[in-house]
Length: 91
Image 1 (spheres, rainbow, N blue to C red):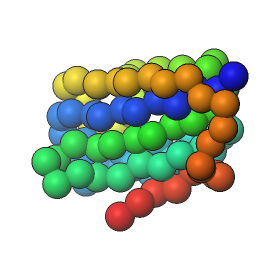
Image 2: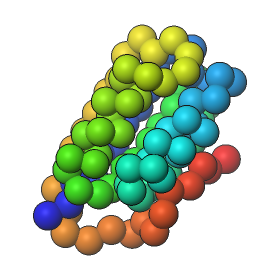
Image 3: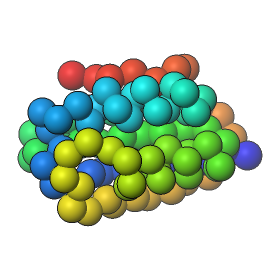
Image 4: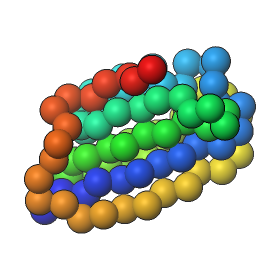
């Protein structure tokens, strides 16, 4: 069983390397999905993979990410398949 995690990161998170940090961590851990900036100043991430791997990425976002993270919203869905192959930075 896999987990798909939707993450919305609030704070000073654009223009500080957040997307590239998340992409690097996701690829290192082996999580698929994407990350992108949203017009409201937040960063959105969708991560898909084994539950422990997705949780490791979330922990990295919360504790080691660049910028000033004020709040992290998450929504988790269990999933058997994925539409993602690799992890990309979207624009």
